[in-house]
Length: 189
Ligand SMILES: [Zn+2]
Image 1 (spheres, rainbow, N blue to C red):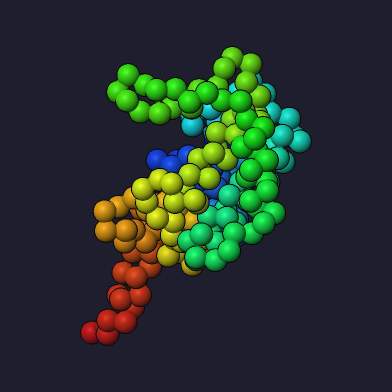
Image 2 (cartoon, protein in one colour):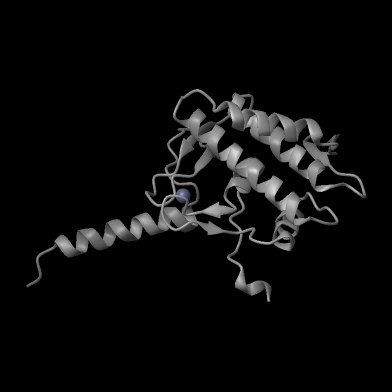
């Protein structure tokens, strides 16, 4: 049954992986978490497993997602952050009860406790969004060059010249489109 759902686009940055649960935002949006159990799946593969998600909690998760998208897009465009989005992000961050844990190899990881609620997982995602939008983490927010996508992504490349949210999807599609355009301009014998 689960094969009916589009696969997740998982990146290295938690907050933008979360906003990528809605793709093709500028064309025909594809919802990757249309039902509560699909959000449970996403949280599990993202290291934030919780026991249950109600339809109301799914709505809250999507509200946070769209708020992160709005704030990250504004930051990428060097515009003022939308106040309602900031409020939702801060509210979710304040609701969460996750612990920062130092791993053996010296990295920071967020840990939920057994019995954690969805709000705890959203708190971690909101905190991650705050780090990248505020500029606390090394990298730059940019918008995907694909006209049907324009997703905000976090560029950590040394030159800060990454153009696509993801090479495997948007990047390849744009390259293929350019290739076909070039070929159709070549006069046929
Ligand atoms: Zn994209």
